[in-house]
Image (cartoon, rainbow, N blue to C red):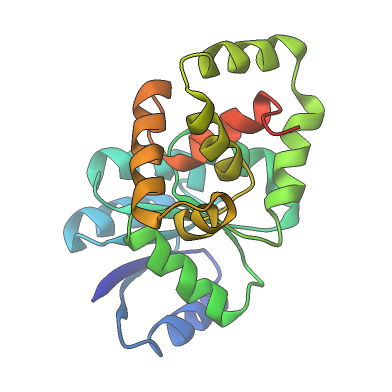
Length: 217
């Protein structure tokens, strides 16, 4: 079973997420928190697999809680719950090691899929918001930032750059493999190699780096 902690200051949001997730045979909501402090303590005590974390919460906000969660429960994967108005906070959360983000009005199937992806070690970027959020970063980035990103990518081979470009599009290993006629296992190997070379903690950070460098354009 995938053990999930839901952290949101709105009881109705938490109840709705719990109802959706517990309808799945392989997911169990083991704890709920109304603020970041509660989320950190519960994650430490419950040994959860995935944390659904709202950014805007009292006592301790989601961004602060993210840093605390990574220390208190390093094995837990954190998915950020967001709205279209939270772009900059989401970008900060992704850069600081979250496993991705999900819109609060996502369909039930997408919510369950995101939790399963995070539990499996993959990143999840909500299709409904990925382009909007990443483009907001691209529009405000400086020339210096782009140049720094391109210099970091100089260590990659041509094939690694090709795989990284697909990560920048938000593709899963399976979808990337279909695009470039490569097995999912081989893509996974390339992704691991790319993360090591770029010193990125997860594929989300690598995807943002690809966008910074305008890779693929």
